[in-house]
Length: 497
Ligand SMILES: [Zn+2]
Image 1 (tube, rainbow, N blue to C red):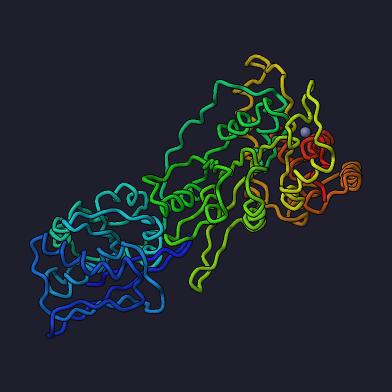
Image 2: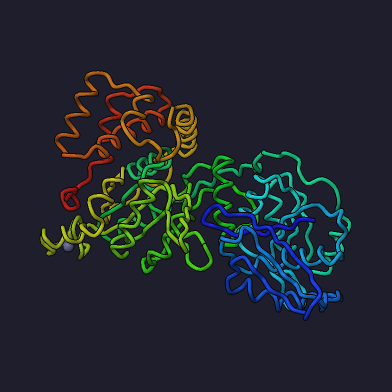
């Protein structure tokens, strides 16, 4: 009987075969194959839990080898596979029990505790054709999100052993389907922003555009930002699976659900919290916002290093970090949503306010975001304070919902349709054609605004999203004009470098 454990490495991870050798000699247990702290300590937990489960511990010299030997093994999830491999080696488990993946921590009384990363472990096992898993009961609901597995679970080690004695037969079934899900109806909130704000947020949701909401306090930036969450379309099954796997690595998931993530870290968050990693190999906020939104309320209160670290995920769609000589990678393809006051004192842009900050101070203030980061923000929306919101009903919600659905259909049908995936003009060109008047308008706008190549492409991406919202395959002149108004912001000179 073969037993495998799992070690997470970023989003991916590796199966670890647990081999046991029993020899006559002074009773004792050695673990080799680069076990780190918690794995080395497993010796005591296994011995005590085993006895409390009424099993007689082998009075022999025990050698446990974790293979591949060059991969450091961490975490308490190795308790269970090591205990089971030892049972198999001492013939307590019949040899008919199939090869299996085991993940779980042993308490001293033999209770089984859950560990993070179950979905990644099962995904890796399935790639290797291993389709039986022994898990603590608390992990069962999460594991059932992965189709095609035979899950053997129990709350206590002794009960799991009894369950396993009943198991036999083949382990491979060649299942490749990803877990399905039942779409939930979208929720439209009671509060409705003014139409121009709604329009910008709808465009951001439809095209996956990053967005800055700025202006004086009292303009509703935070409320408007949070409203975007309600507009986000449900995830595709593959996207929902990726999101669930990332949450699983933090021990935060019990099902695969198609809701797009909306992460709003506090401005005291540091770079480690953004990129993840650390001792527990956990994904950070950037990865947890994957396929959804990373919302930085009062973005300029975040540390400059935090803000500049955002460039890699915005550009590459992932975060990578080096740990113990290995490269850990987490997917992190998110929409960035920022809010900010227009100036340090907050009065700039307020109708009755007087801003005394001065141009240099304002420039310095915006420099914290930096031109390179701002360049990746497609929509910049100024919200004035003190304006009355029109009563609800100015925005026809059922009409707008239909437009959003149309836009998503159209986007899926276009080449390079993935959210935030249009890299360059070459790819975009496959999706849209400009007539000569539109070509001129586009070139002239980019020249006048002194935009980078990224800005030029962003203008077209926005125009395509606006055409999608109108359920049209081709662009109208109006699309480019409106795209220009969304991208070009009041006070833009502040953050240009
Ligand atoms: Zn000011």
